[in-house]
Amino acid sequence: MRQSSVLRVGTIAILAVLLVALSVGAGVFAFPSGMAVRTAGGAHSESARTFAAPHAALAAHAPAPAMARHAAAHPGANATNNTTLTNITIAPLNSTIAPGSTVVLTATLTCKSNNTANGTVVACPTNLTANVSYTWSVGTPFAGTLNESNQSSVTFIAGWATSSTTVGVTGALSDFPTYNNSTINAPPATVNVATSEAPVITIAFTTAFQVYMQVPWDLTFTVSVTGGSIAPSSTWVNVNVRDLIPTCGSQYSFLGAPPCPELINVSMPVTSGQSTFSYMINYTNLDQNGYANPTAGVFPADVFQFIAWVSDNNSAANQTAGLEQNAYLVFHTPSGIFAQPVPGDSLSTGNVSFAVTYYGDYLQAAELIVKNATGQVVFVQAVFAVGQGNRTVVAPTMWLAVTPGQYTAYINFTTPYGSYQSSQKYTVIPAGQTIYINQTAYHNASLLGGLSQGLSGMLLLVIGLIIGLVVALVLGRMMWGTPSQPSSPQPWSPTQSSDSSGTTSSGGTSSTPPSTGSSDMSSEGSTTDK
Figure (cartoon, rainbow, N blue to C red):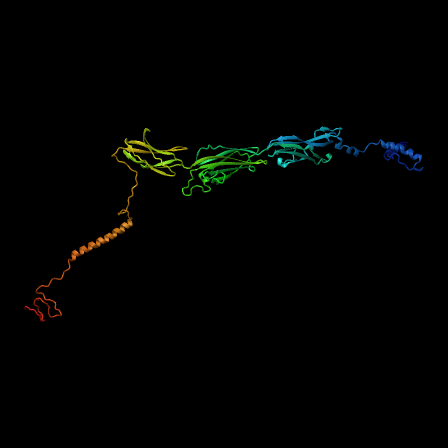
């Protein structure tokens, strides 16, 4: 009995499962509406239509698959992300700026919603704005330039020529398929550069020029440019120095006159924004072309011209301006020394003669003055000499030094560029006292003045030999005596025989002393005494 009950329950369960399976299968595999179902009675039998109708209605109310529901979640269905790029604007759209100035141009990205008929402007997503690249362009390049940038803002730098140009920008959106990789063109902006003529150059010397300028000194000047800028690529600065000789025609050849000799012509280095320039005027720079007198090494006493030239190009025009100044050059300021009396000497009361040597450029007067210890002037004498270079002047009158004491002598110089002075101190002592004179005496160390020691010794040796020889001869004669001389024959002395037998005398008497010889004495025509 228990087993039959269990069997009954199992059978009921199986039948229930089969019923559910049939129901579900009928819903899932229902045929579309209007589709013919083949039966034993034919395709268009009444029984087929009766079977298809309820299944078609069931299929129409079936829920959509899960995959279809996920696909519908695309951002295009969201009002915030469903935006389009409409344009890029430039601010300011129309600008007028001065030549050389700058203006900032900004591109603005605008987004609109498609959920409304006219489109509502909404804030662009941050990630969208960051992924827009910009390309800027200038319609007339010489009107100005843009700083290189692919950002939303750029700086427009105006040129110096009068112009009007358009500045445009395009925006490219990448890596956003939702927005169809849009390319957006902005309406162009117009930039007008104000009227610009040639640049105006202003030069001013900051050196305090005088009629006479003492070398060395700095030639300094300032430069400013209106309607242009000072830069290495647009500005040129030169310094010129010329000798205005009487026969030249200023800085340029004019009406057939030759140009003035040029001593200096240099180009100054220029940095951007520089306003002050300087050049050293000295002997070396002035004589870099060998203009000074090759013998004396001096420059002529002429007027010299100093010029600062400045040129500037602002793209609209190139303008040159110059500023000049004339001056005499002073290379030697006055200075002098006392040649007589010698500095440091003590002077005796009485007449004192002065001689001075001095030099200086453009001298007008020179005066000798002597002052006592209290500063009182006791002697004045003009010692000026016309000319150039060194001058030595002897005072035409003497100073009568009466009172012993300390004195100071001055040479006062007068020039068109100032007064100068040289001085020397002297001591005056009473007459009759010892006066020390600063002199240099030459003493020859040799025995004979004016000869060297070697030559003097040789000369003395020769003299000694001569004196020695003379003394030896005198002493020898004294020792040996005088040599004997042959005496005259005496009456008793025999005579020397001769080849003749006698002495012949004609017209006279001859007598001979007696001889002891055997020869005969004979005479002719004469008387012989025996």
